[in-house]
Length: 244
Ligand SMILES: O=C(O)[C@H](O)[C@@H](O)[C@H](O)[C@H](O)COP(=O)(O)O
Image (tube, rainbow, N blue to C red; front, side, top):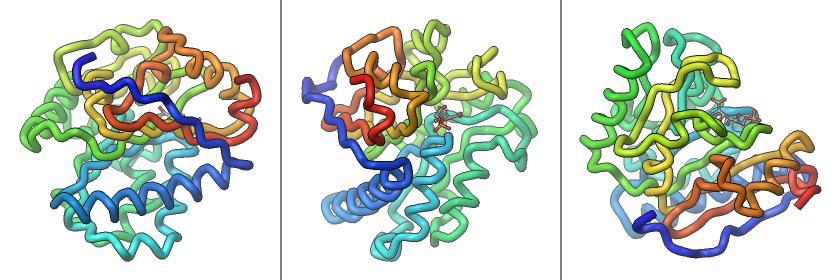
């Protein structure tokens, strides 16, 4: 894909899931401090999932969070569950509770994907999100974090599903997701691959098979195709790399 460099994927192995989330939170906050020392604005794409949300909770506990000018940080999502606003399944609600609510973030910096209470279809929510991204100048995401499912999905791009192949748009509707809830909105692989830094966070033995397959370049798995233009990092625990 154009613009994607051929840098090697790097794997950082931590001793436990907790160490993954603590270290990823610290890495995110330091990267934001660094980024905002050389540019006016940073665009970060968040992920749902256990590890992703625990990372945000770890960031909330970190003293580094107070060293960041949050008015210059814009937050986006890699995917969202198409359920009503306020539903406990919403990735943005979980992120709000874990971190966003404790930060001095202007509301206009929080780019949530649409909920089913606001949009008639996931297609409309995806189109509105693509418009939001275009209005922001289609940023090269400074950091894009992705959780990974035990099937090798990232965001809501699932192996063998049409969404993984989608081209020509920033965001898509996903139906019949193998992971509930079934209807979702996701960034496309194209949008993901515009990121400067892609960080895949994963912990636990249930991920060991797909971590090994992804790192061997098995492109049936969306996780293997998610790469940044400057950096592709796997931030994992020892159990998740046991089969590499
Ligand atoms: O909407 C979602 O469910 C997530 O965005 C999803 O892509 C998640 O990140 C992975 O499934 C990993 O989740 P765990 O960390 O809970 O295994």
